Length: 323
Length: 208
Image (cartoon, rainbow over all chains, first blue to last red; front, side, top):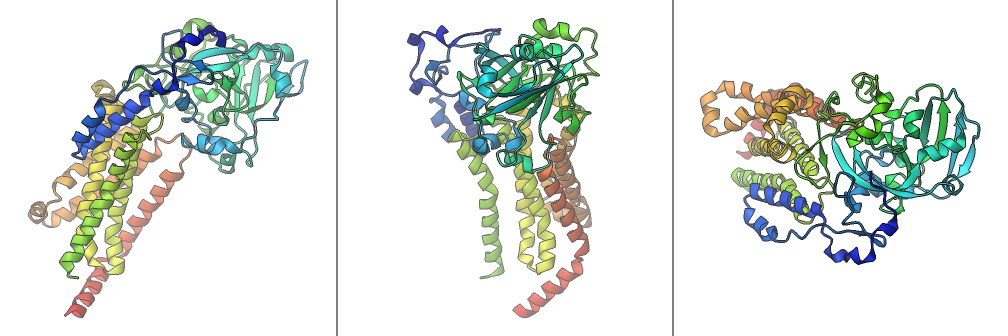
């Protein structure tokens, strides 16, 4: 795992934005060329073939991220893709719905209710909730259950920080999260496509794992609304739907939380949702994934490549049954 | 305007409308407007277009029988062939770009994933229909031709199922297309050919 603070990148490495050429452009043009060819206009395609530029460089905020890689040497998914291709059904079910519709969400002021089986429950405003923790960048793979993936530099802090402060009782075994439930701010909640509010949860040992974070930003910037502003969960070895967005409550429980996708289709989505190439979705294969920006699918890695860090959590658990 | 001219004009219109989704896709490709996952975007666009055109093609006969506007009949072939074209492009795109011609995975998909099984079956079913869409084949097959071409209803049903089985939770559009298909099928069996016979004989008489 690579953890970098913003200061790690010298300003001499910053490349002008004009140099930045999105890889998407290349694939987009390939698509155009291929289709153009099919339409008998292949000649047009050749005009564009020479315009594919140098390696990607991208500046977000004040910082050039182009040299930044994951611990496996993977390139970051461009900021534009991370913030325009989202599953956030509270704003619509199409990938480009959240970026179009999430402007109605008001992430400030925001408060979070901590409750259930813990010694220090309470309602906290977001600033107080975050303030005691040291913020850091975390570069994680994000593997969607739909077999696509990204590499995202999150900005946030370990969930274990807030768990320690809440001091769960000995009988608490799980933590449950809920998303805001307000159709005025989240127009997708007017449809019955899922049960609202969105609910997710973790076993307490998963929640305390050092890889598990609460993110308040991406690429060193505050989370855009479509990415789950102002605060969301990131559990990198699990499918993306576990990463509940726009969190308003956190509750310690003895019983396993009944998460939204499991409730929607329990034969397809479980509580654990660990990334596992051996356990297919009933309708599609999980063996491979498309990393956005790449043409050829990659092999999906067990626990999304975090097997060394998290496999011990599941010793003795049948991952085929507990999918 | 003579009948011949009207039909020609309608056919030109079908070609323009039929090529528009392709033109739009190519334009979006060149303008870099296919989003973060262009391979998937193109795949879905081609599949959606194929299904919509197939349903439009199925609407022709009921529409002709209800309105008595027989000039529509010759449009079935170009519309059906456009549907086949987009469905073929959808399959080729899936195999070549989505799966980058990994035959092992394509074979596994076609055998194991039920939504791909039915989608592939729909395409296979349309192949003989596309081949026998020529005047020569219509003549050679005679009455059998009409029977054979009823397979288009099977293909369209499989197409709708293929659509339904791949969405995660939002079944709105798959259900809309199901409703359209069922309506078209009911219309087709409830508007007897005799009605159109009456209408056409009426219009013939008028023209004389």
